Image (cartoon, rainbow, N blue to C red):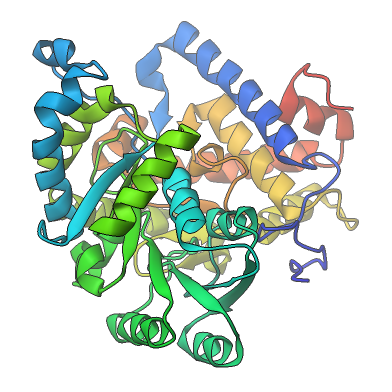
Length: 423
C-alpha cells in the first residue's frame, strides 16, 4: 500500500491518507458546508465581488436573457442538439460519420457509465497515466466489478498488459492529477497495445482535452485513436457548466446514452444553451493566457517558499507534506499533529475565511490530491484580488495562521467544521 512522506498509508482509492479529523467523504462534505458559511458571510459583509475564484475551475451557468425559453428539457434538445453535436465534435476532434456525442451530468458520470458499458465483472481494466489514475477511474472499475491495475508511464503499462489476462479496457489519463502529461508517442503506443489485445481505450481527458492541444501541440481527444473519452467543461478555457462532454465511436456512445438515462446521470437538456455558449467562446489562446498568469503567481510564491513549490510545465503545487512541515516548523512542533491532507484543508479554509480565495481543494469530494494546486488562474480575477504578490502574501500569512492552530485540536476542528457535530 502506498504511503505519504510521513509513512501514513493512503486511503483506498485516494493518493493521500485520512486522519483523525478527515476520516471519510462524510467529513469532506461537512467541511464544505462550513466553507459555504465563510462564503455567505463574506458576500453579505463585503459583497460578492470580494469572493475570488482562483481555483482554476469555471462552473458558471452562462446563458443570455433571450435564451430563457430554451432552458427547457424538451425544447432545448429538439432545437439545439445539432448545433451542440457539431461544436462538440469539433472541440473533441471527432468525425460525424463515425463518432457520437453525449452530455453527461459530470466528468465522473461519463467515466463511470462508459466503464460500466465496456467492462464486465471479473474482467481487467488497466489504468495508465503519467503519475496515477484519478479516483473516478479507480472507482468506476470497482463499480464494474473489474480487476483494476494502475500503471505509471509507458514501461509499466507495457509490462502490465503483457502479463495480464482478460484485459477489456484501458483507462488512459492524458493529463494526470499532478499535471504531468503523457506525450504523443506514449499515447500512440498505449492505444496500439490496447487494441492489439482486443481492449477498448477510454480516455479520462478532463483537462487534457484542451491543455494537450493548446499547450503541448497534441491532437484533439478523438484524433488520438481512442474508442471513447470525455472532458469536463469547467476546465481551462471553457466556462462551464460542470458537465462531462463525452464522445466516441457511435455504437459505444449509444450504449452509454441508454445506460446514462437508466441511471439518471445524463446532463439535463435544458443546459444545452449554456454548453453551446461555452463551446462557442472557446479559444486555445485563453488556455495559454491562463498558464501565463499562473506562472506569474508561481514566481511570486517561490520567492517566499522556495523549492517547496513544485512546478510542472503548466501548474505548480504545494504538497500536503510540505504544508504540514512548514506549519510545524513555524509552530515549533516536533510531533506531527495530523496528516498532510488535513493540513492542506486547514490552509484552504484559512485562505477562504480570511481572504475570500476559493481554491481547487473544495472542487472535488473527496479532493483528488492533498496538494494545494496553483493552476490556470484567470488574470482578471487575480488583478481584482490585488495581483500575484498579494496572493503569495495571503498563502504565506495563512501558513502562519495554520501554525497557530495545528497544535490545538479544538481550534483546528472549529476551523474545519465550525459548530457542526463531528464525533
